[in-house]
Structures are given as C-alpha cells and as structure tokens.
Image (tube, helix red, strand yellow):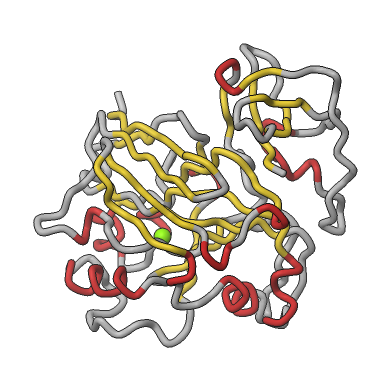
Length: 294
Ligand code: MG
C-alpha cells in the first residue's frame, strides 16, 4: 500500500491511498493533525496501523499538492553516514569528511541527525541562502519509518518494527559541515530534507534490493542498490535502539551511495535553478528544485 499526504487547493491536508495506476488517489476517512503529523495519524499509540477506510471520493495526483509523508517529524531524523563503500572512498578523497581521512569503511554505523523543521515535500523548493552556504549537495537515501517502538531491539526481530519506507534527500551544506566538524548544522538548514513522494508499507517493498537513483538536471549522478549497504537495515535498527528507545514514527535515513557533488573534482554543487530527482524503485520519484533565498 502506498499512502500520499496531499492538499487540494486551500483545503486541509488529507491522506490518500495511491492506486496501482500510480495516479488515482483514494482519500481515506481519517482525521487528526495531518498537516504536521501526516501518515502518523494512521498509527495508534502502540505503533500499530489503524484500520484504514476509503471515503467514496477519488482524485488524481495531478490535481493535488503533495506534502511530505511526515511533514513535521516528532523528533530528529536519525541519519546514517557513509553506509556505502564507494561513498566512503569519495568522501575520504574529497577533503570534506572531517571525521576520517582513510578510505577504510566504518567499523560501526555512524549516526547523526537532522532537525524535523528541515522537512519539505516533493515539488517544494530547496532554498539556498548564499549568506549561509554556497556548497549545497544532494544525497539520495532510503528512509525507514518505525511502527512499533522498542529499546535494545534484537537484529533478528528488527524488521518487525518497520512500518514502511519513503525516500529522503539528505541535502547538505558541505561548507557548514566542514567548518563545524559535527554535522547537525550543515544537515539541518531549512528545506534541507525533501521527503516523499509517498509512504510505502513494509509489505510492499523488498529493501534487500531496492534501486536508488539520483539525477541532477536529468544527468544521472547516483545509482546503487540497497544490497550494497555496509550495515543493513536490521543492523541499523539494532544499533540505534541500543540504549535509546525508538518510538512509533521515528525516521531513519539509511545513507547515500556514491555520486554526490562533493565526490567530483572539482565538486559539483547545486545552484539555484537545479532540479534534483530521486527515485527508489517501488517508492516513486522525489523531485525538488533549488531556489535562492530572496
Ligand atoms: Mg546522508
């Protein structure tokens, strides 16, 4: 099942089920703080999916404005750094990676976070403020949405805690990241977390081999399979929940493959007018254009 959070004209945000034709949307009879919580209103307090009932209405994707599946996450988005071998190498060579300089893969998952307020939906602009950063980079990533929470989750049971998936562009201000050593600031600028276009329930996607692609202005920059992750999804959930209680609605961005702008010589930063298109097989296309802050 694919869920979409949308608005028609000035109406309130709603949740719909996307039909298999990829265009028809069946609005669901569900209410709550959808404008901020998005799909999370469909989870009960224990993290189980409520019974989802369609209304008698239907609309089409080209008639609506998409919002992120979770427009305002309840807390920071967990992110994974350097989780693909080729990306480890390109970052080590780039000089922008302040944590290590060697090309050796990390021995344990590298976890950082992005602020909830950085989230935008597909079709909304990534706003570049040149007074803050001029080295804007893209990172296409599979994101996990946790359903049932837990602490010290065993790897063998980790996948049972996943409600579903979406795509995230972990947009990064490399100059800010480099200057401040730690990653929170450079990863959390307003609009720097495009998410979507849809949410896909865990029974609808094989994450052992989902294809991730990213184009900038139509030029293919990233292409990989989730099979190439250094630490698989179960390991990531077990690692993060080790002493930290994961909660329903938590988001984990699982790391980006090689091909980011910092990996080119010279680097290829995003500039106003550029369009970044990210596709994860089975999820859909997340597309955002960069604009200059006026
Ligand atoms: Mg990333």
